[in-house]
Amino acid sequence: MVTIKKATAKNIAVLASLANKTFSESHGGYIDDKKDLLNYVNENFSVSKTEQDFNNPKNLFYIIYVEGLPAGYAKLIVNEHQENVVSKNNCRLERIYILNDFIPLKIGQQLLHFLEAEAKILQLDTMWLSVYIKNYRAIRFYERNEFKNVGEYIFKVNGKGYENIIFSKKIAQ
Image 1 (tube, rainbow, N blue to C red):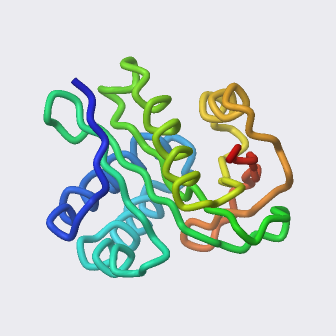
Image 2 (cartoon, rainbow, N blue to C red; image 1 turned 180 degrees about the vertical axis):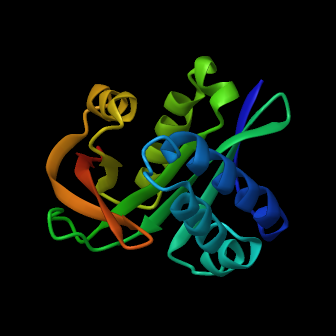
């Protein structure tokens, strides 16, 4: 059984663990220097940093469970400015990550539909995100879900830039 729940303060350690593992799984092959990857993960996905992010009221976290086990998570940021996104009433899907062992279950699709429904409830009209240009699986996923390429963004890992695509999608009300 798959369930999706909005994260609470009790879930911060689980979120940090999921963030650390899923980022390493999804991006580890793209980061040239593994020390950069380790430094980035340690700096951005520690329990204290996750708690700081969690306590920002613009950030919303969700955990997807399979048979009671945390299998992935998502982070939405409400009204995050991006020069290539026209809407001021938007949300950034900053993170949507599924642990590799659960990817074959296609639960990422369920999580995305859930997040789009949450955006509607929040009366947001646009969802946007960035994805690394060599992450072809993710690009296909977003294109299948009607996200449109609206620009570029440089994502930095310890000072090294990685070219990303900005995708945007209107949320039907």
